[in-house]
Length: 531
Image (tube, rainbow, N blue to C red; front, side, top):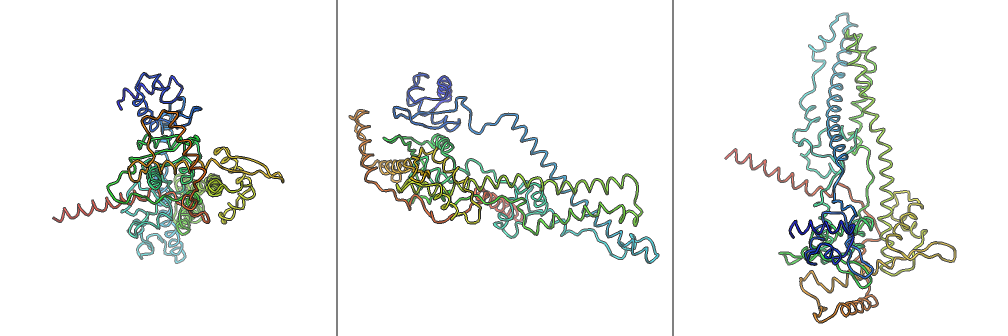
């Protein structure tokens, strides 16, 4: 697809305010339909958009009217983020220098003051010099600086907290200064690339024999349905997929190129469903208790020593003057108070984030109940039943009824649920659209047999008219809908339990590869030097 054709398609879309079928865009652009179809798929990857079904049952390309590119951010926000990153980096370096420098300085001064006081009691004077000559004080040794810095650790390498640290090799020691940063600002948060995010989605597609619906994506990725529809549009363009509309209006996506393989076994193990990928609680510092005590102890010592130095250190060592008062009292006291104030202020933000995570976990667990009801065509679900279901699985979390009800109503709106009331006035929810979506994907799977890369038994006749083909497909699907049974255990594994997935798991694999590559490179360099 040439850039010129893609630009012409984009211009036609602007005239159509971002919404139209292949025929609409082809007519507006004056281009062949196949060229327009390929251009629209490419635009789905690069611009915010999704597929929908028109009133006539055709695929409708629905882009943002402003045709905004995916991942774009206004210049002001990019500059703000860059400036903020630079300021945080400078502030972090300043914090470590101040903490370690003042800690070492006050250790020296306190020890000197103690020896000076002892020398004064012995009427010998010169306590500082005497203590130093007799070995009463030594500057921190190399082990201390190695503990602070850890030279093996690459500068800029993230620290995701103590859970992640336990996955590292024993020789891969996290330096103390990273734990100081984490104490003040919290642990680094993983920022997975699109490639890393797509890895799990591709596994899902391959495990589904190359065919996927939005409902199946939501089951595993726990996004909202509007977000999943936009993501399916991007995947369609990125991986050269195709979309078909079932007779009942469900869009089914097929990705034949993702099923090509040089190996005999192509069936992938699917990623865990959303209820086995709950979000763990965000920790304030991410450090172990011991690391937090070490950092807090150093800062507390500095604060106490600085605050009492006019009465303890200054008289014994003969220190005085405005410069000493500013440099040894005001500055370290202000720094130490700020050092404790930042994590204290972050406490509120962490609580709010954990509140949002608990709410999202309610949705993730609730998806299992909703999907089971829809696929089994079971009796409708009430809010009370949903609350019992979620509570029985989130035993370590206080599950509020209002959260369950809110998420249940949200899912009902996203899935166009059948909402009724019973004789007692309780609201009941049924989700028949899920069963239709899963049956549609199973029907397309059987028809295309992408795992074998061959056509199935049902093929189109070139002599069929569009109406005849549509009628035949509708009849076949209705018969499949009537006779077929959804394999609930296969589609919805492990409904009786939940699990958590740490954020760093998305990026851990690539970081391990990078570390292995660096290690091999270093070993090769050493070998080359020996040779």
